[in-house]
Each structure stands twice: as C-alpha cells, then as structure tokens.
Length: 253
Image (cartoon, rainbow, N blue to C red; front, side, top):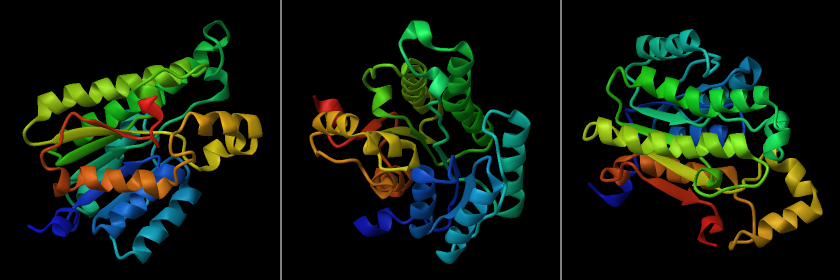
C-alpha cells in the first residue's frame, strides 16, 4: 500500500457528532472527501440538511438523523438507522461539545446546572455514542478533546474536567478494545469558528490568546479535520491510545 492509499477512507462508513457547524462540519466533509460515507449527527435538523447536501455533493452516501448525544434512545436510533440504511459503522468521531456561559467563571461562581450539562454532553455523550457504536466492532474512534484536556484553562473548570475525562476515556478504551479497534483523541487549540467569534473580536483577548500560541494564529476548521482523517485511516494503523495536540504549539509552553 502506498502512502497516499493509506489515507483513503473509501468503503467505510463514518458517524460524526456535533457536525452541523464548525469543526464537526469540517471533519464530516473531509472524511467524505477521503472517500467515506458520512452521517453527520446534531440536534438541529435545518443545519444538518445543509451538511448532508454538502456530503452528497462530494459523492458520498449519507442520511439525515437529528440526534441528541445525551439521549440513549436517540443515539441507539441513530446507529440502528445507519446500520439498516447504509451498513456497518467503521469510524466514529465524537465531536459534540459545549462550554456554556453558566459553566464559566471562578469555581465558586459556577452554576451546577451548567457544570452538569457540560459533563453530560462533552463526556457522557461521547461515552454513550462510543458504547452504542462499539456494540458492533468499530475500526476507529476519534474523540475531539481540547488543549483543555491536556493543560488547565482559567475560568473553564467544567469544560476542562470534561475534556481531561475524554482524554482518559480514550486511553482506557484503547486498552480494552485493542487490537481490533483503535481509539485516539485530538486536542485542538483555538479555532476560527462561530464559537470563538467573540474572542477574535475582543482585541485584548485575541492578543492574549495569540501570544500564548507559538504559530500566532487561530486554526482553520479544516486544519483540525485533516488529523482526524489521518487517525481514522490506515495511515494511523499503529496508533491507539494517543492524544494528538493540534494546537499551534499551545501546550509546548
């Protein structure tokens, strides 16, 4: 197999959660461009319709199935439908995540409702999707963590706890499911998406973040998607239990 052939994801079916926008959308489209049939999952049907259309334009098979990753009945319905309509799921990308306003601040100021919701989506949701998908043997799982899963971030305690947990979950699942299923994570830094618009527009905050990033810029969503394609493909056949920092050097300081 040539190096380029190793990155080919043809004849594989992938499910990407949190795929209606931003990083998740870029991952779904990049996997489709690599040859996979991709099912994007998110709660918003209208946003999903757009992504489904973009996947079809790239020649991939797909389907529309709005899903809340915290709802076990809905998650099972998603994977049952993919299995019935398209076939066996080979690749799962757990990208769904939140960092709500009521989960930000110093520890004493954080609302427990925000804490619980953050852990529910970011950690429990990823575990639930992986558990259900893993009842049928997968080839690859990629968990989208964060630099907040590798180092601490101020005023983002529930988010950091959830992402550290996701990195730990990646390592433990990689051990249990080897050698048949590879489980890896990526840890993005700050990415230019709708979720970071406020930070990019705040000059002092933007400069602070850029000064902490050796590459001195925010990532584009496609720059996060490409490593996910790598980890999902045979090019990463000997990689499992790893967390790949895709952070512009953030964690190097």
